Length: 100
Image (cartoon, rainbow, N blue to C red; front, side):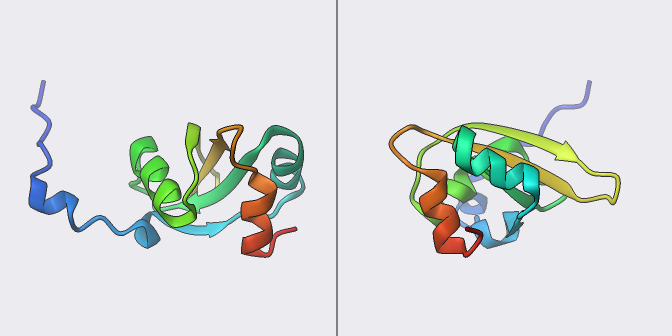
């Protein structure tokens, strides 16, 4: 088994959340997730991990993320469905983004 490379402290300082989260999704299913399940949907960088997405969303929108699910679409884009904690409303964040 190949050994995973460890991230050095100077590499962590170069984290840019705008490179991870590309844009929000505004489909019928994602709007339903915002309204009923407190979830936001984004298209993210193709090499982004769940940890990267969680950190980027928390930094960009100043919210607490409880869960991240990632899907690879047929078009080759990676989608992230992010569930926010109960104290933060996805509808407020989506209103700031102009989705609702």
